[in-house]
Image 1 (cartoon, rainbow, N blue to C red):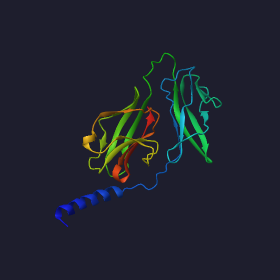
Image 2 (cartoon, rainbow, N blue to C red):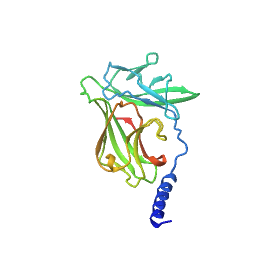
Image 3 (cartoon, helix red, strand yellow):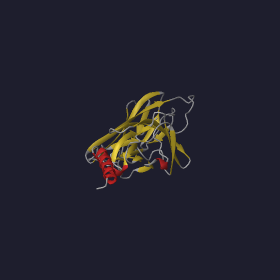
Image 4 (cartoon, one colour):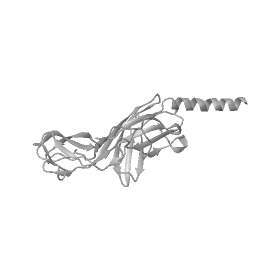
Length: 235
């Protein structure tokens, strides 16, 4: 074997072993309920109908019946027949949304602060997240998601980091952080594709709603290895 070909073979084997050594076998996740309603400007006397999604252990959306419960009905009341949440008086409490799926009870709670009508409003729905690494590769940083015309804008903070040494970087929006099935790729490998590895920047994603996805992930694309993830939450 020629020396040059031997060196290329060694480089390929090194990249393969570095990713495969951190492979994920099980792509199942806990069943979850995502509450999409934002209560940042919930005023006394206002009511909203519950907007929530249920995801099974593969991150696939399922149709289920939800039950609502208020921790303090003197501040926030709920109507389980209409799936309605009503602001009664000024204060802070939480509402729990639950469902029984395949014999298992799944629930999620959201804090709610009821304000009076003199409180100035904020602007629109905003989601946030914080990337953390799930392997030895670098993956970190805060981000914010806002609605724009025809899609969403993801604004990464100055502490954003992705690993240049990763053999095939890619970023996804997904509802199952352990799998790329059903995920939306929003950034791909290679500097020629405009990948930014450090610092503040924004990505505009067309045709996507702010409530469509619950996670943002980093992957070693050629070998199907997740290297970082962030849960997307209401601000």
